[in-house]
Length: 314
Image: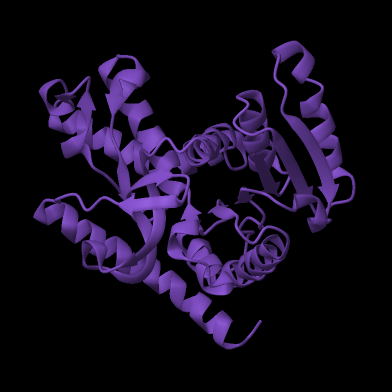
């Protein structure tokens, strides 16, 4: 199995690292536009194989999409961060151009690939990738829900002082600090609702910390996080290539599910060999449903800038 990672920055390199070291794929290609950058990252990673004991081959290339040919999964991490003075529309315009070009180049050499979108704003870029490629909706996946859920489970683990592996919880909605919805009502510790262990004020703090999870790390690190995003992507790729059919919250195209249409937003999905095998339509409470509708409104507002971009043919 072959996986290509577009973008050799911190997140892209982290994706390649986890996929390689866990031997999720037999071949990993890292592509970047910066001369020699992907080659350097790939060589550095490959030199860990002898000490860590994995056999995945890793190759870096500079903007040569022919080397990505035959990829089963392509991870798109490329894009620019928002800079001081840059409007949201300007950021979307720049990253939309990048994601659109990358998606088309990828499919030229790997027409059957499943595409995982990491670039921000992620729900909007996932929507763009779907519209730009014309692929079936099961083959375009935004990974934000997997990352947000891992952060939610981590904060619950810390609040409970219990192993993170014993926590089950998910986040739906948009991948943003005002649009995500941690479903604390459904969170459990070894099958027992966390509400039996945590007071309401503690749960609300966990929810708030989760929603600000990305911003917190950016403030601490001075840049965006990369370990957890890379691990979340590897988790998705693993479920696809090994057809595990795990339930993973992802940003996917909705066509009536949750009474939402023409939008990519985070909902629980079964992820397997076909990408999105199915969308799980869980019964939400009235308040959770209202929050999801509000989240969808905000995501669509962001998509409006993308629609203008597409209409102008940029």
